[in-house]
Image (cartoon, rainbow, N blue to C red; front, side, top):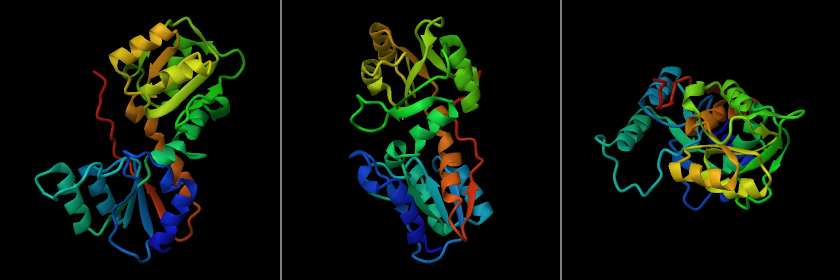
Length: 259
């Protein structure tokens, strides 16, 4: 399949024009207009991911997090990003990133996160005009917050010790709101939507205090914990591409360890 046709499939699912102003989704490195046969899916680029791509002979890496965020004034091999770019070009590997468009789109990160957590009646969180957040219902009568924490850790395949929670552990949880990645700015929207608990990553101290004042439970499953699902989700979508072998990168990119 030609590389532009392959990317066209992605952009039909998650149009680039839906990205946030601060984002840099789309081409990071494009080294060919021709045919490709092997594509790797990774959350982001680092030297281990590049090594894995070279080892597997891939021509294109699809990432969630962009390789290049701000203005790039030079490519210096002594700089982490510069070195990664140089290595990718050296080995003829193109990179395309699908960040905020895939967070928002139908079937993207946030819809898939709801399915992974076993939530029902998933919909856009009505008070979130950006389109990132979702809300849904736990089956039956719901469960206590303490049980939901264990449930989330199990579903997301992350160690319980890496999760943080603010609120009563005895609180009954039925309606859940969420935003993958770093979405603490939507706490008030989750409260306004009637959520009992809001799940996201990268929650800071003052945001947790705000949640307590608003009387809404908040569960921080980590940036990696809520976005690692990107690989399996996009791989299942792209598996339909004829003549292209889709590989999921198996490098552990979680920078945090249980201590």
